[in-house]
Length: 402
Image 1 (cartoon, helix red, strand yellow):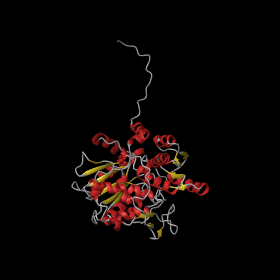
Image 2 (image 1 turned 60 degrees about the horizontal axis):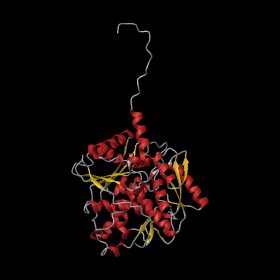
Image 3 (image 1 turned 180 degrees about the horizontal axis):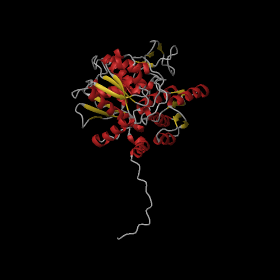
Image 4 (image 1 turned 45 degrees about the vertical axis):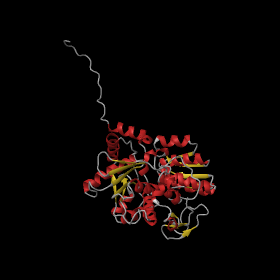
């Protein structure tokens, strides 16, 4: 594994030591990136070195922090060729422990929390990050404090309870949960592992970028469509591509990064359409894709910059389009996706129709989680879509031949 050279602020560029646990830049609150001496690795860490390694995200140990991993087998999920669209691939993150891509980031964050000797971690979550933190904290012998909206999918609450986490259900959105976490962290001395409030969840998520490149034979796809709430996966993959270029594994080419959001909560899309560099808080956020119900991403400035630099785009899809895509993927591809993941298919359909992607373009769609985590959401949507039953009425007093 790699020794960390320093942590770098993504706003002001200041370098900070990683000898002690850090959150965000002390000057401007910027997200911190972990930096390694990649030039020293260039001659020894080459793609052929990966052959035969364990198929988890920790196969890329040379570009991950130097610590004993807290691992449940996360990463190296399949990149499945679509049966419907030529040149389209589905990266199925639902195969991860706890059923979503959140396992990657929390594996890395809990690994470093244990290395630093932290005992109590706290997180606000729309659901899947909570389950992942609960699982990895249990594996590490660390206490997890979780704050979730009270209307999270049932599976998320049940799994957190099963892992022994301390749960607070909040009458509000993830932004309300985050405010409560900040208050508790200050009062109780817990360590905050909120999205982009510490540097290591990005390190876990970036392995998705390494995997896409490796699974495509070190060729970049034309595009990557990523369901975007907090956007850590999109940010992490961009960091991975930059690292791989420094290592000499790829050239300067980059996929066009696409951020897809739900129409009922689309702050990144609104900012993108207005050519803004940051987002406004999205009021009255509403979507059945719980992971996309993030009114304002902490790393919004990074997301928008990545879209611009790669010639990408942000777009919103409706809940109806999401649920149609979810059922379509299940029936055509045999993939039972989370609603957030199904949004990627809905976005691809729109972008193909607009001519943004052609049939010849290689495009990776990210399914970020398993539909099994959303059975109550999917069933409720199914019942709501049923036509109302006819009103029965009693008929009596009819006399006639039989």
